[in-house]
Length: 452
Image 1 (cartoon, rainbow, N blue to C red):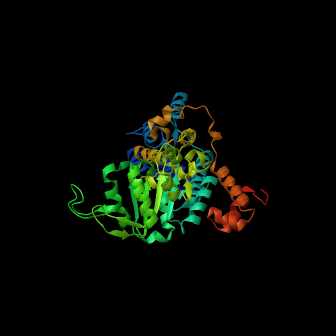
Image 2: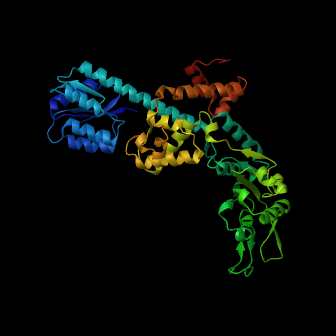
Image 3: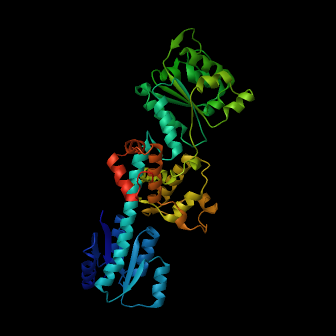
């Protein structure tokens, strides 16, 4: 995509000279003699580069610089003036100007200085395109990941989805257990049926049986009509029981019977009803410890846990953080109807140093918060929730160069895939969900050969 440049000068001849000087670059140039009209265009269009005269009637270049930096610090503003002073140059740089050029402007000097900024923004565009490409290749049934831990999880889901009758999904809060359950549903023979979810920690103990199995009119006080339970509603589909560890023991016994016999009996009814339901239970608790304390039935645990899938915590998913950030940036840019291109280096650094106790759910909330709070094209540290900054991330002296770059990340992923595939390029391409030609192109770009 071409780089957008806005030129502002109350002198028409100067505007024409500057436009001609940079017109040969891959840019779209818009010129204004009125700085206030120019500011309206900047606020609506988010150009990458603004070149403005310093002394203009109505609004000075310094004032325009301040307004643009307040609105979007990612925009590079270059001040041009025939009234150079050291003080004004220092003030301009302090307020965020990318450069300060004296008039009369040499076309060669202007072309060289603006060329550097153009190349910087083109590199940012290439980085964003790479991120988008990686996210697309890392997407799996609503989840995103290319780390070894997530590759193993995706592989297990593919293998067990066609066959499971009951399943146990474990992992920390916010790690994505419900997404795993939905993936199992979509890849199973029950995908044409309903996906029905129940949060066991949110149900009053006395209503558990009615929720799961239904009731007949008059079965208890308040039962004014017949009610279908979730098992019947999920017939030919999947019932997802989240936080199964919070289910009362009495209800656990009846759930075990329903799983064994594939039939349910509404409260107040003498008739058993056959159901065909696949059940996925999830918990962040250690069920074996609850069994030892007599708080969870051992026979139900083994009935549910014939196959157990453990969802890794975000801190264990090396290399996935930037992919997830890009995924959520795209999601919330669309939801908020904003032009958000990504995160600044210092904002990315803050995220990289956080431990993410709330896992992927916490990361999504952080990006959603930043998308709503920010007004610029790049999310910066002031857009992030305050607790991330109070933890010391923003004030860290750690060099930005310690952040893993996308190029390094892509190379590591390619090497990892080739290693897992035993140097078989077709298999490596399948693991990364890209074409073999794309794999070869990226191998060539990174200088990767057999044996790495």
